[in-house]
Amino acid sequence: MEIQLHGTLPSPITLWSMQHRSVRQILKSGKVYRPREEHCWPAVEEGPTAAPQDLRAQFARAYDWMAERLDHRDPRPDPSLRWPVWAYWSLGPSGMGKPDLRSLRQLEPGVMLELRVDAARVLLSDMDGWHGPLNDSFWGPGEPPFDEDRPTSSLSHRERTYVERAKRRSWRRCLAVNPRRFTQAVLWEIRPDDVVSHRFFKGHPLPTLSH
Image 1 (cartoon, helix red, strand yellow):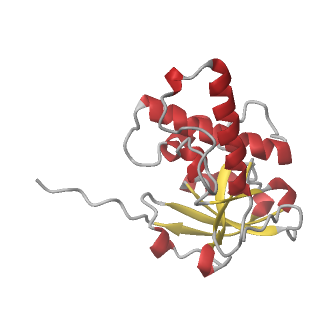
Image 2: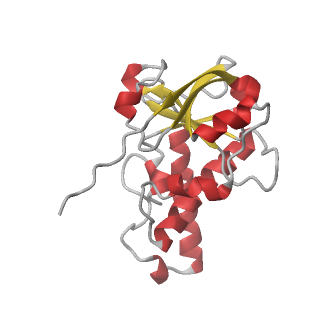
């Protein structure tokens, strides 16, 4: 059973965010960190190689949707800010403790930040449920109320509007979270006084294939 916790979260809450090492330097200097859109694309592409243009656009729509949901909860501090900071809240069966960097297997060197943040600034989402927006597909029990195999180009404007609204309504299910499942978090910025601790890590690059 899913549990919607946003209205009853104890505050502040603890989050863990994996960032480039330069983010630690920004925060150490007393400045607020907000992600720049051009630095978010590697995450949006979901991998080390460039995604096809249509897939990039699909991922961007998913991240835009999550940003819109956060905007309803905590209005963005700057209209030019497109995407939020991402973090972990719960690691599922492992609970809400410190993530094990050996199991997370970060590809690039970076820093893991432990944050204590006012719950009103945070939007939580189920990590598995997030694949609904990412895959641009209906997410929920049972069959979707439309034919997902039917090409969008064959739909009328009215049908396309209905399909898009039905999909986006289903995506909201990923915002119902359960601490026994992998749960991620987004927030607009990291402030210097949010940081409780940090730990640098080397990363584990993917092995190169020999020919």
